[in-house]
Image 1 (tube, one colour):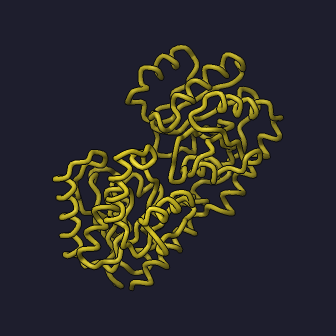
Image 2 (cartoon, one colour):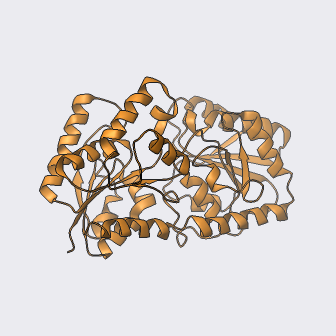
Image 3 (cartoon, one colour):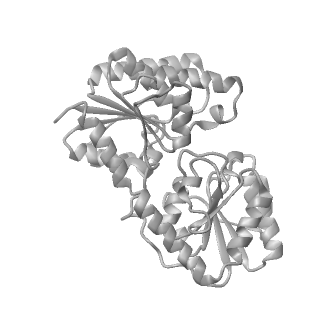
Amino acid sequence: MKGNILVLTNFIAGLHSFRKEVMKAIVDAGYQLYISVPDTNDERVNYFKGIGAEIIKTDFNRRGMNPLADFKLMMNYRRLIKQLKPIAVLSYTIKPNVYGGIACRLTGTPLIANVTGLGDAIENGGWLQKLTICLYKFGIGKAAKVFFQNETNKNFCVNHKIADNNAIVLPGSGVNLEHHRYQEYAPDGVIKFLFIARLLKDKGTSEYFETAKTIKAKYPQSEFQVLGWKEGPYQQQLEELVKDGVINYLGTTSDIRPYLTNVHCTIMPSYHEGMSNVNLESAANGRPVITTNVPGCRETVEDGKTGYLVDAKNSEALIKGVERFLDLPYKQKIAMGKMAREKVEREFDRNIVVKAYLNAIESFA
């Protein structure tokens, strides 16, 4: 073995969906891989065990801020690093980045951090933004490499002295183009739109629901679908829209490909993203995307060619975008989907991300 690599993450599902190719490439390159994660009972853990990774259970609250609990997390990470002596630590999402980063600083271990998005705390401003910036400075300010998923996030962190010449922009998490293949376009007729997300405010749930109500009344030959967790503040509203025939709720899934087969376009009205994996995977399957003109979404679409960009937090803008798509001839909808696939092939191949990680790790070996 060339040495140990320690991965710190908050959610095994995200690691499996978007980073398993990176993990396998690390193992195939001759490193011993250790993965620290809270949810070790998830069945997706078996994939990583199957490629030879060791799984380490590290409990923590992914969302809340508790100074005592967060200090304990940092000490757990420090203990792990001292025990495993990794040649590099890879971290994803805010708590592993911050508290794993502090542990790396204390132990003199190279850190490769991935900022998958700045999150509500920074996006919404105020005192919480200032606190989060301070935490990021402590956590990833001395990282060997900081990977960002879009240029705007990188510039923010450089301007606030969180990162400097260690900052590199990747094409998000990339897309596995063998797994997500081009699918023949859905038949003409009822035009179907799909919203794939947790039903949260900052995913644009309100705007999607308002658009569905308006468009269904004006264009009866349209269908609006929702794929994702319905628990939360929008659950009752969703159930009413389903009852009224405005929304077709599809449940949840770990594989969106079968659900893209019979839809003509996906809609992602998010307020902010690191890089929208939903947009990239939809495009890889040959589906146009209507999304917001915000960092992490705008990079995924060429406006008017592979989909449409609309203003965030603006139902009227989203309605107009959907109407533009509905008014397109069927052949142009097909062409838009094909161009979406070609864009992903050019710019978002996951192999680009895999190579970036291997090159970074090799520089420490």
